[in-house]
Image (cartoon, rainbow, N blue to C red; front, side, top):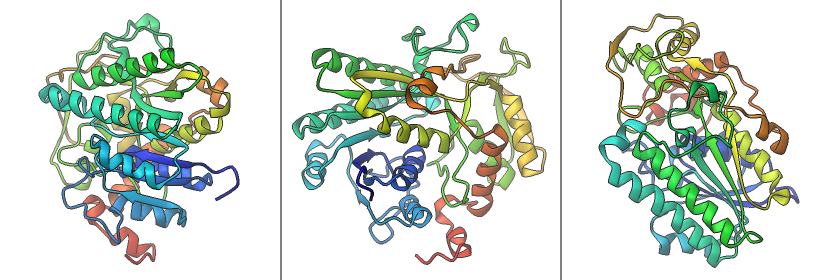
Length: 367
């Protein structure tokens, strides 16, 4: 680790977004401590030599040894505090919590309890251990269904008209963070990162999205149809007031999202109080657009059927990322074609997710 490296606690670091961020943090010279109870991972994601499968792959990608892991639920303050006791934490990145829009409409109490409690316990431990730097994973869903005239969406856009419990849980956490910085403006350095739609996988094909149960997002479902794990893609609504009738989203490569965290950490010395950033490409793509991009990547036509709209889905939203470009020197670099190609590479090498070790053995990696 270089002299400028920090010790960073990554809550939820064994999950999709968190594990890709860990790769970038390690490669940037930081020491990383992951806490994750694996509740969002596949049921048989047992530890391998003390690490869950995603972090085994992180170690093989980075060849870094300064990675530590503790099987801890962030809602369990006693266990979480013990991790703070054992490591001199400088910065906390919060990827914990549940994140599926559709699932949250069916289980709202679970989402409020898990997402709010986890973030609050992290903040309590930080305060008790004099840790001031906090990066929070939020979501563009806090903007609700914006007026098309307001797009691309700026960070100053109206929030609060949330369409699902997941979005509300993120908004409540944002409100808590705002109130904490108002109460102690010279103490906290808090960065809220509003992700748009992270997709893709690490370019090696070793690390990607291995969702527990039925995936809730478009790209993993496309990949599962292409790989033969599901017979057909359900397209939820083709009657939106968009150019082709399907919802428009801002899809951003997961590795660009990961790099945004390194950029924000590099700028912490210049941040005071609370700062909010959109993390996207600034380009809206329809569901049809992404289906066609993925068909090019996998070389086949995806069978689909039109279904009713899902509760909580909004017609169109995409980002204005000029603030992140100006303040953080960060801009998404990867194309939508790369997102689909990297995702397909991961599924080709890992048709059963992290249960498959063929990707590791083909890379000459022993586990």
